[in-house]
Image (cartoon, rainbow, N blue to C red; front, side, top):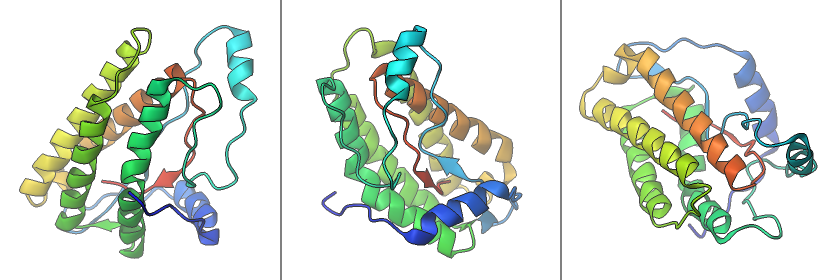
Length: 198
């Protein structure tokens, strides 16, 4: 992607409002989307000194701004952030579209998510992760594939997504947790950008 994410003043207020609301999904062609984030809370890994060192890193003023690897980051961390950034403009456009639809999800949104994540998966698989990070990378890839399989099925079968809200929640949560664990293993700060996704 050559297009950067830009700061939207209303985005932080919208994220706070959306996070405070618990909207149910409706089993229909258009249904309300549960709020999803690309990353869940980071895992509490390492010795207290390690956690303290990671905790000193401050989140950017705009959590949806393009990410830059901290100084001294590994090549795998730099490559991971490049993979994230390569799909970020499309991911933010989809999130904004879902928001503009009153957080209702349509079949075209599912197909768009599949296209975005298929590209991201190719980039993720091209990264050479060091052996000490390989377990988290494999777990994230497996969670992403499970999420992608669910969304592909939902895109192919109208009404499927709304009929399986428990599965949608499970695959979204697994993806977020595994993504957080991988970021932590790569010594990257958590991603606080809140997006709407299927």
